[in-house]
Amino acid sequence: MKLINDQSFNESFSYFDKEIVVEIIDIFLNEYEERLSTIKKSIDELDFQNLKFHAHSLKGVVANFSAPKVQDIAKQLENKGTDSINENLHEDFQELDKLVRTMVDEISVLRENYV
Image 1 (cartoon, rainbow, N blue to C red):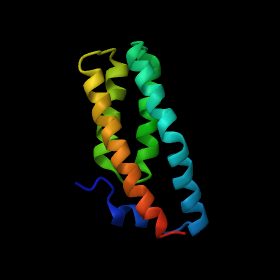
Image 2 (tube, one colour):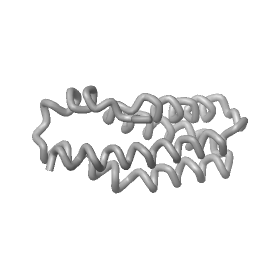
Image 3 (cartoon, rainbow, N blue to C red):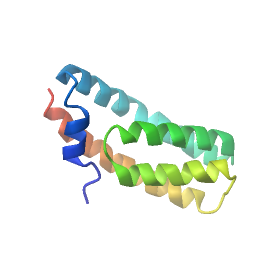
């Protein structure tokens, strides 16, 4: 199952210099572990305000890469943070973690087209 829509990704970044695209990808690749860790910590501590903020932030970043399924699970966690719902948070996080890691693999391949 492919998470990133290559056509949408390429269209989104078609107006950027290749170096900028690589820089944007590299920033994500360097930050995603910390982003996931922060979301997990928010869930473990039932810190709904931070969960909402960090899930929203990740959702926005993921939107740049045309990965709607990842966006959807981040949005789901954001909504649970907004509504202080602790139902299935760990399961949702496990799904998000799995999807982001798959997305990272796909982004790494796409990055090669811009180097």
